[in-house]
Length: 286
Image (cartoon, rainbow, N blue to C red; front, side, top):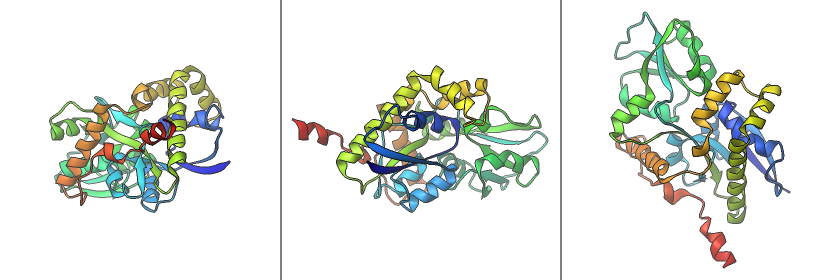
């Protein structure tokens, strides 16, 4: 069988959505080899065209659009929630405050940099950001993934990235966070079939959450307890993750517009034009 490399983050929603493949519930025509890396590393490696399929931050996509197609599935959006800018309760932030972000090309970094242009940014693994704030290495940090559910009592939320997003776009659209991309050098037939496998895997995961979630807990594959896992999956790995809607595509396009208007991208692209053309299969079989 043809080997396909799939890279995803080690956070609970990515692992949850991928495990249907890992457990052999779907995808019998390819040998999928998975690797879990933090989102900053995934974005950097996508820029190097490293993996066949990779989780990415949506904000990265315009920079890799010539090499990767955008997949319709395994996506994470915020809807009234998302990453949080946190600080110590007794700390007042100056305009040039020092902040820790999870990566230069993350969606939250793009939105943050538009809102706080004078902030002094350092980039850290997302698991190290809370500690950096607690130890005064930075004045504030943006928490992502499961970190948004629970943090030290001495910290408070300075701003919600969701609120900043809504203020910037002036529209009722979800916050695009993470998606999946597939290497364009793969044959089109393979690309179509791999996307089908991934859609099926996310669909199976969502439909079998009561079976799959305990399996992840038993194997120590995630960093949160059962209660927090249920909350987190409800936020980021749900029915809206299976196959993107028009509203989600519109949100991605709005993110790209923001990035283009603020000189993060050289060109303005539209998400729907960079999907895998699965209509080819219909024409071939007609």
